[in-house]
Length: 206
Length: 225
Image 1: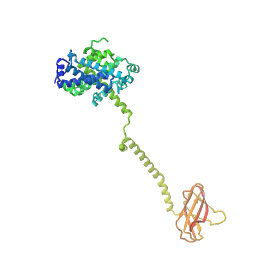
Image 2: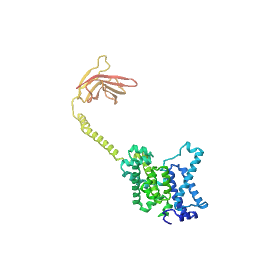
Image 3: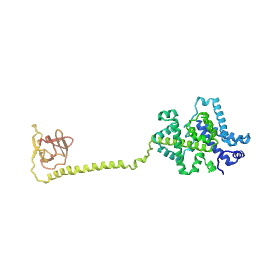
């Protein structure tokens, strides 16, 4: 066990050699990263699964059978680039097949709500408490953003706010949420939970 | 924005929040993701914002469902204790009981006592004759409305198996079978008339030995206030 801080040559070497705990960390960490990235691009969940698996597979193949990585300290950026390539091929294939262009991706709930791992009863309670402590207007703004999935222009015009205010509001609400979580679980476990949302990674970092 | 993306810059510009809110341009987003994949701290920050956003959505979903869906009714729900309706019903029933008892005490019981007392006090009673099958008009007798009973005398031409009577006014009509009569050729019929309203009433006594009843006697009783 070791405390993960950043990627380096030693990490890449262990992963190339097939060290089980490093492999577990690699999968958990980048599944999390890729989930966030693909959700930000509104990729439908089944397609996102395919892209995630293909990305991780290609990275491991490059390490073990290919040229490896030239900048181990930027291993994350390398994975991100591989994912961009997979995503590009995925979009190109579907463009060629003609399926997604005639019909936009079938997205159930936009950027959020797909990853059920993020939603737990205790977190919902804490978030509900944070929301209830907010002024009515701020609560309504967050509802429009995350529940109604309303556009920035619509929110700005309906609530008469600056887009910057939205960012500040999210920052403050998130900070309250994190503080409540830390009070409940302690700093390290809370950080690990937010960061990883995964038992394997928790064991790795705590 | 012209970033040189590192953790300090990302923190200063609150890039994590912008990323989760979808406020970055395509180039900014790509550059930030390159950094994000390598930065543990930004990953923790974005993860927290992402988790917060997902749970905000879940909370509002729960709340909207709670508003829209009424509680499912179960078959035994009617047995559930509901204090307010139970107390209200009990209050109404108690009030109705109180009113009933009050009415009985104030009105019904004194009236019954008066009527019973009437039976126990000796008094004179007039006798009115029922006219048989004559061609002339029926005799008319006048009584006060305070009179409790009227006695009607009749002549029986021959014995009948059964007897009945009719007392008919404009708004009141009473009729009924009488107990068997085993007396002589002249008899008396006692009818309670205490509660008759003022007006004229025809009184008739019939006898029957089979299918058809015959009139034994009749008269007009005029009740005066």
